[in-house]
Image 1 (cartoon, rainbow, N blue to C red):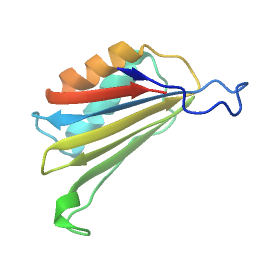
Image 2 (image 1 turned 135 degrees about the vertical axis):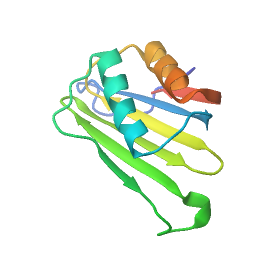
Image 3 (image 1 turned 90 degrees about the vertical axis):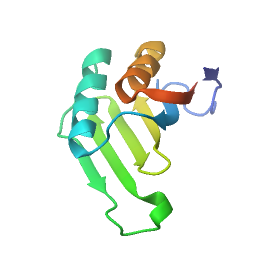
Image 4 (image 1 turned 180 degrees about the vertical axis):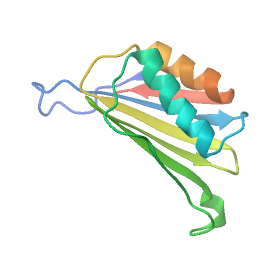
Length: 123
């Protein structure tokens, strides 16, 4: 996993960002994304304060960008995911002002979506 300091600005504010991207083999739809938000927040002990918001592009944009966008608010920030239907690719960012086990987070994403190939970066 890449571990690169993004900035040196505002060192008094603790924040952690994890990016995981990969090609998924699992089924993916609205209900799967709802289950994933519950899985990842539960596995990492992150607390939400609202229901996840999930949108499907449904042909509104370019065919190459067809897929889903989802977000869940955390007490300590939020989690975003974008998933393309073709080529079955996803990108997710966990952004928190609280610490979490980034290795476990990557493993949870990898297992839940059955990633064929993935990369991750913590910053």
